[in-house]
Length: 612
Image (cartoon, one colour):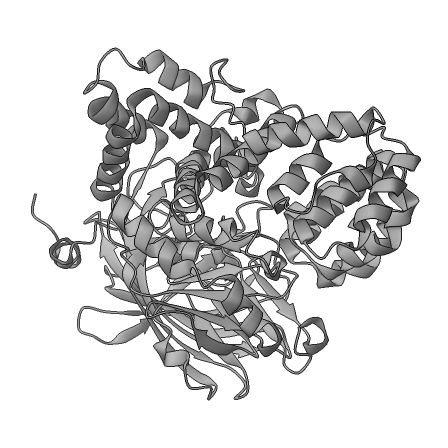
């Protein structure tokens, strides 16, 4: 077909058209009429008023010759004025209407034009309660000298700091000018060479088209240190060197993934170390993954998180779920690729241990999730897409791909995955489109191996199929034998041969101890291994969960520090739930009242609901 000028340029550059037809119930955008193909952001970072203020300029590609309206997503934004560029190049005032706020989708912004405008500019500011931004005072940072701000746009929080067509079904390029106080460095999910000089006036360019949830910004007392020709760390000075030491295998991860699945498409791959309040382990913002400091353990035991965020450079960033009901296409593939990276860099034994831990976590969580929400192709039915995030899209999706690998063999399956990434490069797709591709390029090409009925069971039915992979580790089997011997009283804790245990073995050991272990056994373990004082956040979390379940009161001073010192939801929300379940609601509520101000709005919303 004949392409419009913008679409033609994109096609010639190798980048796909910017939107895919998808029924995304979480956006107001009228993509069938007009698509935003490029954003220019000009924003001032105002730490005093906790707001971003300035304008966004959209370059528009009109899909319908009769359309004269642009509909954007917003949430908690104040819109000052809207102007648009006419065909003559002159700018004109545009009429706009900001609808009442919906609790999930935010407020629909409708802009009406007298003619089809090539560009529109919206002057606005975010509000302090923007769900996609967190503002930290200097006292809440590691350096204690400068404030810190960062974004978290996934799933539909970009609309809380940019008026945008906030759906993963569309993709935009962007560039930006960001102004900050002179002693604060800004960075974005873009080319960050403009941030090397700390002067308060920064320019960014993102030449590859990305979905809006991958637009990201951070600003604080950040320094910069390279790890390799392609990788570097941005971090507060206090954690910079430790982060570099922890993650200096990142280049090896990139090189191994290039060999398996095709060349890395994004130029540089840098890491931004965030304050402890960051609600996730990491966020795969392209060119600059956002990372929690809770994985800086000092022994590289938790660097699978980096492998996960890097893997998103292929699955998620390059090939993207078209709606949040298709989240497993992002996270299942990423969890699979993550584990393959870990195997290539750190060996098969470690990779299988991590598979086993994740599979055990999934099987435990499946018991607590409503059956419909255990399907890979989830139906949200109007719920907030943040509700889609559980171990189901991650680990059930990973196990499905492991199942296919085991059935077809690694060589055949690797070629399929590599071809899939190439076919849908810089595109978004639905689960239905994936199933069609899977059938044509794997199932039908190799008949008699896996049926489409089995594929549909994995994707569209709740729970795990009876023949789902159940990864097991020889190391864990040895731990289980020792655990049983200790529980029977045949050996003491001091006689457990833990000197060479990995973090994964410790986690398996703690997670599989009885929840009615008894105080004497808890004291014995704690006296021997000082687990209450563990500096590894994952080990500490597992021990605190065991302690709460067993009524072990010695953990509570350390647990208080844990809950107030970090905001990663994975490591705090289950603890609040367990405290409430085990009769410690009042204690937990008192701790939360002191910790809440330091949590990200996403964590606040989740934990607020536990106490309401």
